[in-house]
Amino acid sequence: MVMTQISYPKKLVIASRESRLAMWQAEYVRDCLKKLYPECDVSILGMTTRGDQILDRTLSKVGGKGLFVKELEVALEEGRADLAVHSLKDVPMQLPEGFDLACIMEREDARDAFVSNDYAGLADLPEGAVVGTASLRREASLRSRYPHLNIQPLRGNLDTRLGKLDKGEYAAIILAAAGLKRLGMASRIRSLLAVEDSLPAAGQGALGIEIRSGRPEMLACLAPLNHAPSAMAVTAERAVSRALGGSCDVPLAAYSVWQDSELYLRAFVASTDGQKVCRAEKKLSLNTMSQADAMGLLVADDLIAQGATALLPPR
Image (cartoon, rainbow, N blue to C red; front, top):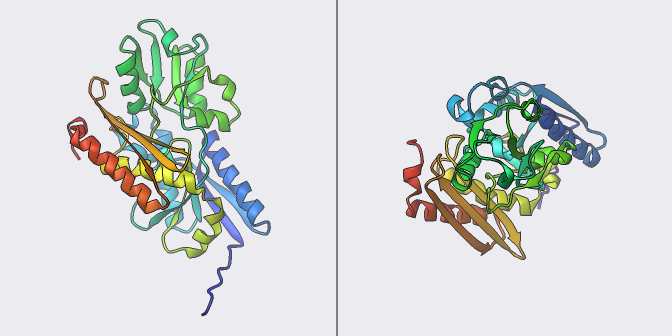
């Protein structure tokens, strides 16, 4: 039997958005790769995406999640970069032809964080208090549980959002806890929202690495960074979202955790006003990515059977 030996690249270029959080993520992956392959020259190609440039409208109105990854994919396609690092909640559920999600790294805290300079939690906010969020999922959850609050859109990178809070434009804002923790800003978190109150988005808190298809040497190079439990959990979540056409204009959540040897997946689809919500969950013992994907499809079927399609925008 002839063994095919894979030669690891001597040079790697990581494509990344230029926001502080995105660069932290790229630098983290760079450092992991340098530790694995000390002789490899690993550099970062910083880029500004359309999602970073358009800040006066919500993502659902300007093109959705793909606005954060398109320019990075062009860099991969043109050979200017070998891999792109993404926050998985920003990655469309179906990648364009010619691209693969090579690995999913160990997940950070997936919960949403309540951030305020004056209040300890959502229950402390007075009637009419302005709460900022960029997510229809969070908006629907907030409108359902706290109808007396004034939910307003909030765009921009992490520092921009915190700056708007500090200027008094919002009484509180809701952010992903993972980003704050990664940037050493956990002290800004006044409280973490229980998943029962704000179920996370598919892939929230996880980093994914995208490559061009047909590069087995890159798959082998990145394999040690893949965290199988996180990858299976996120795969199940993304399958739910993919089956329901998940995008920035769909108030949809999907979140799974391991409980002993079983994966516990919960999901919901809601109307934007939070008045109508379909929920589904499933717990299964599984061992492969294909089983995780199938589990997500089962949960999506359950949501559809409950009438979730009526809550979704036409495709």
